[in-house]
Amino acid sequence: MYFAALLARTEDGWEASDTELDDVESLSDLTDLAREASQDDDTVLVLLEQEDAWFGVVRVDGEDDPRLYVSDAVAASRSSYGEILTNELIGREYGDDDVDLDSLDLDGTEDGEPEGSTSGGEESGAGTDAEEAVATGPLGDANLLDDLGVSDRELRALDPGDALGGIAEALGASELLEAVR
Image 1 (cartoon, rainbow, N blue to C red):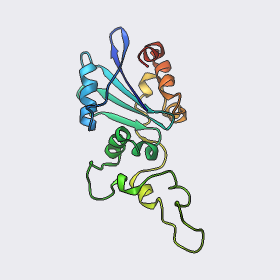
Image 2 (image 1 turned 90 degrees about the vertical axis):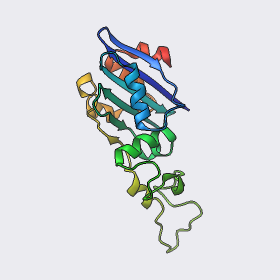
Image 3 (image 1 turned 90 degrees about the horizontal axis):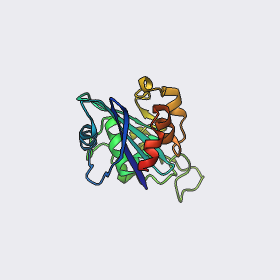
Image 4 (image 1 turned 30 degrees about the vertical axis):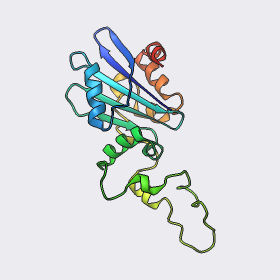
């Protein structure tokens, strides 16, 4: 289950709206959605979370390139919207021939022994392709909220289940975010 919201900065503070991601197939689509919510090229934050697995922040400032952060790249790469962000962050376009995350069967056993394997002398390379394709842990620009009151250290320390609320609280927009949740 996904939750996505837009926080748009205005002269009077922040405005929040939930957003439907059904038509989002690329970072460009997500950026366009954010720009549509902007007044006078102000800052817009797209806040995404998938249950308690990962969260992501996309910051759009006017016509500048979007800035991205994902709390857990491997977990995010297993989901359609997270894959959009992680692909952008690692410089891979959807459909690239190098590593197709769908073919890696990322099922949570990448860090340990692969399913059905034995611990006898066979080489255990499960997860090697996944680890090379997507870095474990946070990925992206952890400084993207520094000027808004959330340092890189604070952003990295946020628990995925409470992260969007924590970000909104630091911005003074927690009530607005809860209203659209």
